Image (cartoon, rainbow, N blue to C red; front, side):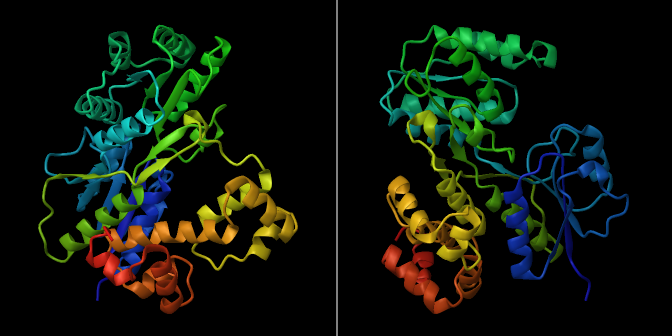
Length: 384
């Protein structure tokens, strides 16, 4: 029997896409090849693939190489070189903007504003979604015309600081406090530096929300860590692999744009929700986020954080207002709900993927947290 193998190629790495595709592959006996998902320009000339998932942002020559393979292809974002008819599985940026509006309006800000910083879909669609949500609630949004014009012209590195300064000039004129939305954490980092230089404060003068889309940790490491709307890149990868697998089994690969809604919001200091300041607590939170699928023990977490168990438990509860076990369970339940809503994976597979050694332990924990069994939760569509 021929092995079905789906390649991943990109110049814009997003771990969630690879993880979602891999989850589909494991469940359905499809090999996922991620060798050139970080450095697509290193792709070999004749990969032994049945199909390909690709996202190429800044390398047109790479896009041409991928398309020249003449394989069944799903795009993670629209691609100028692509022939008509290729399916696209992309984040729902309009929904991201709507979610950002809900987050900012809840802070009680006086004014609402968007800044468009590029002509790309992520900027235009997300800002349009923000404005649409605001108008539906009777709120006005400042959408500066000078920013709209600047967004249409690329800026060279030599003039980047001038562009940042021009945007801050626009912000300076707005009635404070402002709830500000823009797409990019990297540009927002630079805005924060200039705002601080001019004597403005985040979040007191400007509460800010962006879209989480990089692996650099820019939002987390900005001078004031930035609240993000989080696209569901995992579901993008899972659904893209599913489309290709079904096509390889004989179904037509329909030309369509599939918009995947965001998973939620990660609140940080830029909207008044501080991150953990204690480095030991911050490290444990990172380990819980990244390694929840393993059998994490408090003793092991304490060892990795280089503190005693009792000290860690006290410091964690003082800062997070919950126990380490509660935080770990919350993270595992988030993952379990996502898998139950969006995949056909068996309960046993989901239990293992969420760090539980048996279906019994998983089902007991899930019912304790949600008042529903995993099967009932799935049957309700996740509304239980």
